[in-house]
Image (cartoon, rainbow, N blue to C red; front, top):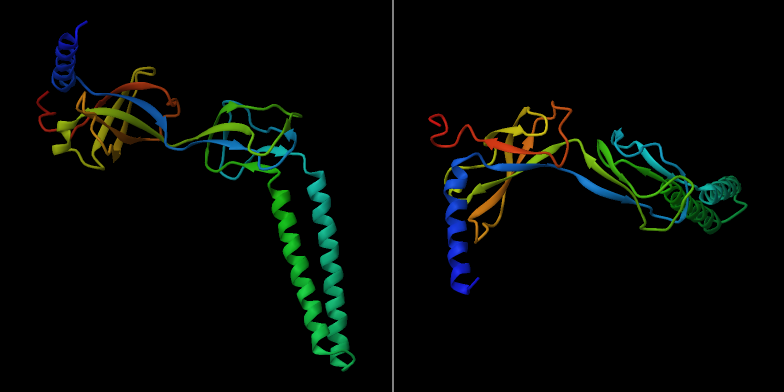
Length: 246
């Protein structure tokens, strides 16, 4: 195809996309508003995986546990040292009341307690990292590891998505003359044959120079439990000028 023919084809495509194509309802794809890959913060053996692919979970629920016998032992050791430092401080304070020791010794004993308390907090944080907890309500999309597998820091464990779903809809740029955030949308899902209500929450920051379109994101109602990321459909905007007459 010559350069001139290609240009003619492109101009024809733009004309169709911005005109005739959007005489029909714009299409969209369902996406999860929250999606992330959880990774390990330390090295160790995967002790348990309470949630598998497809399982739902609540925010704060344990999704994976890394064996932490060493960290727990360190935590207990530091806790014992803290109790020892507290007893020394108590003894120094008693002696100070009897004028048997000076203020410096009491202050040093107090600083020793503060130091051990900080070390215990560090040990607690290290121990807590053995539990990989859910950052939000959602479902497990993909499992990257298995139980009893050895993992390293930053290694992928689970891919998860949140329960709140959105539809990414492609609209003509000319709609920017009337479309705003909070605009109501009715999204018809092809896979289930159901219609889900929603509202526009974000409008794309840039227009595609070829198709003269841009994406908008619509937050969908969470009442439909059959809705899943990746489903597609068409969107109707009841507030669109001339919509009632169509």
